[in-house]
Length: 160
Image 1 (tube, rainbow, N blue to C red):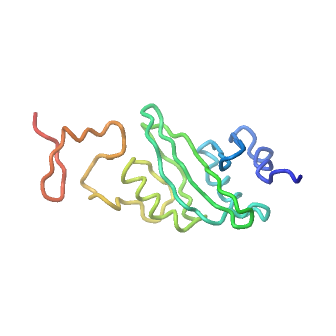
Image 2 (cartoon, helix red, strand yellow; image 1 turned 60 degrees about the vertical axis):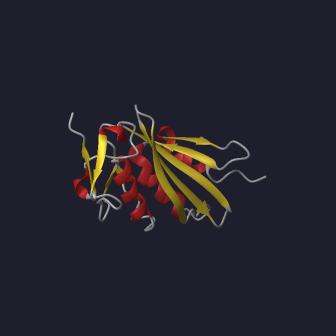
């Protein structure tokens, strides 16, 4: 049985990633945010891997950290993989992968809009669902809808 081609990642990126190849689910890569761009480029460009399709990208707010997920697919291997990075919720900045997968453009904008994660190097990082004046990120745990009211196209804090 041939070795899993993802094992090569461990040798190249060493302590900057954890690889979970548990049976019965897509492989999971937990990546140091400083090497996310390089890992994603390797996954797409390595001729034995060719993860050419970015299916989805999102985040989860765990309060003490943000977890960013990329779900990608290799037609060559007929395999899916999750790539995730843990970010500081007080300064959530990570390199954009739009230079690798053009489809990341809108996905990163949506994640910025909902979680406030800044994608360094993004060609047009601005809000995609909410107005620039909105000022808060609705999918973060510190967003409290009960303290807000709707007025026209904007949501404003309720005077206490």
